[in-house]
Amino acid sequence: MSELDETDMQILQLLLADGRRSFVDIGDAVGLSGPAVSNRVDRLRDAGVIEGFTAIVDRSTLETGAELVLTLAVTPGETAAVFDALRSADGVHRIYRTADARIIVHVVPPSEDVEAWLGEYLDLDVVESYEVRSLVEVETVNQYAGTAFALTCAQCGNTVTDEGVTERLGDRRYHFCCPSCAEKFRGRYETLNETDA
Image (tube, rainbow, N blue to C red; front, side, top):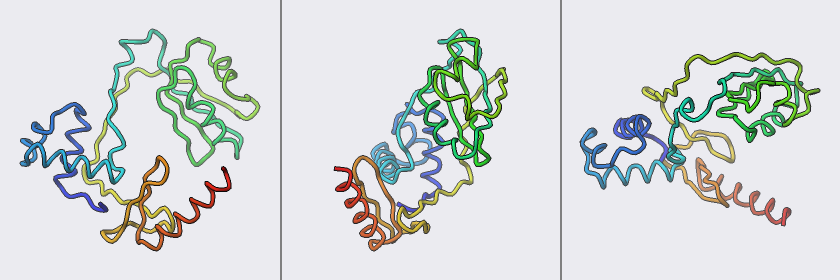
């Protein structure tokens, strides 16, 4: 699946608004039967467009701490390590890594001492500076109207068209623009796995 039609986009919008909405209800909204919606959702999952379904919890009902946004300026070359260290830190809700060596973290730290909290997870020598801002309101907005989904070939980086193929290797799904790229990638993948074994 390389292109999504208007009905696919409508289904995605409805699922983003309410991931528990029944396929029959979605079908009524888009003019399809429940089984037809189920088939489309299966195709979207197989293509990697839908990675899973999750509950969005109002954290204010669960936590008493202040929600913060931390912006960390990190020593160039260290952003990946800092990102990995903080992704599983206590209280982190979302984490972003930017191209300009910054890490942005949405967090409810377990203590008011942000610097001590950061020090539990990373070497503060790689943090050049950081800003702390209190959040007043948070809302997740999932709007993809007008968005075109374009799968990229895992081997060459070209856009995957209708001639493309999808393969599962290990626990991941990869998309390829052609069978030749899939074969090259599979060969590299198998060689790397043999080396690691």
